Amino acid sequence: MEALKILVVDDESRMRKLVKDFLAKKNFQVLEAGDGEEAMDVFYQEKDIALIILDVMMPKMDGWEVCREVRKNSKVPIIMLTARGDERDELLGFDLGVDEYISKPFSPKILVARVEAILRRTGQSNPEETLSAGGIVIDKAAHLATVDDVPMELSFKEFELLTYFLENEGIALSREKILNSVWNYDYFGDARTIDTHVKKLRSKMGEKGEYIKTVWGMGYKFEVEE
Image (cartoon, rainbow, N blue to C red; front, side):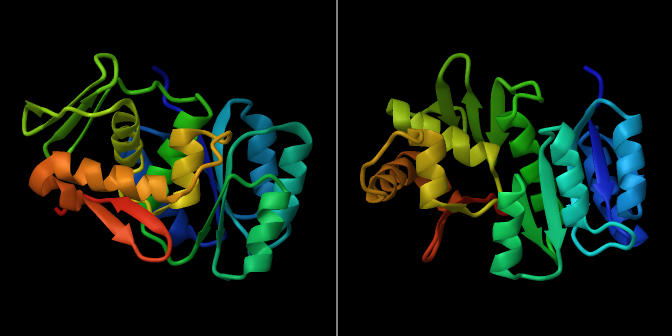
């Protein structure tokens, strides 16, 4: 499969190199632009960009202008980077059709995880039939989950939930996001159903249940201790 192209737009060359290095390790082809105008030139030259990582504060054209211009012609996924943790910025970003919004400083590993999650969500990456982390293996085709090679007896939703956690390893997930992704948007039940399923899932995972960490006031995060 041909490497997917990611356009990284940031006026800081160190930041571009950092992000590029981490994406290259995951076999993405990385294109770079140092300002908004250069970003648009690259965008129109390269017709098959899979995702754009876009800084807000840039010379010539800022991130918002680039986003508006791109959205006139394309629904390519956009991750916005900003040094300002301003809620108004975030709301503006979502109004303009931004897919994710990450404040600097950020973990490059988390950024790459979000890139992969968005590409899976938009159907641009080959869905992996097998996921694994910390001794837990999920075989999607066989609908089988094992912990240290021992099969777990999981309900359908427990299996879906564990799969979602592994696909978003290292990312803090709100209860609302988990509900929307695992139970789908048409679920109107109580978010506490997630807590119940997580409790059962942790129990069935044994000591590996501690990989599902509670993010107080928000939701959960699946993280394997290195």
